[in-house]
Length: 75
Image 1: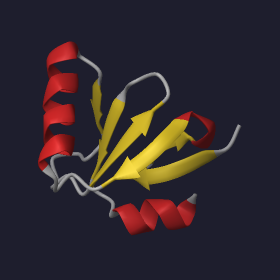
Image 2: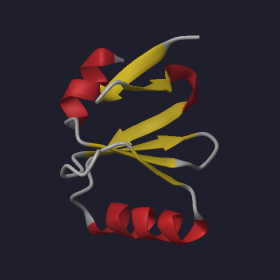
Image 3: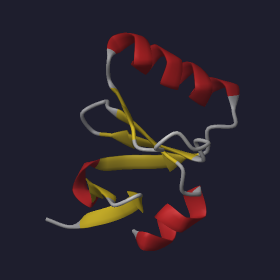
Image 4: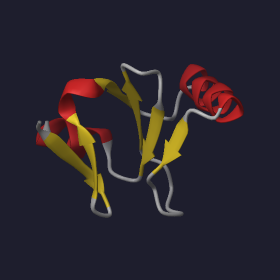
């Protein structure tokens, strides 16, 4: 298995990642809110501003304080 660092020592399996998105658009914010209501959000931002949203194949939404470009570069 290969993992990518998403900040603060947290790692995600690269084979499970579907996309890495910016949280700035309204549809992504709605997706995050709907996922919170469904209990599928994993917040790895450690209280910092969310700068990227990672969608997995299991429909979990992972919030990270790392920039989208940084995570994409690590992939």
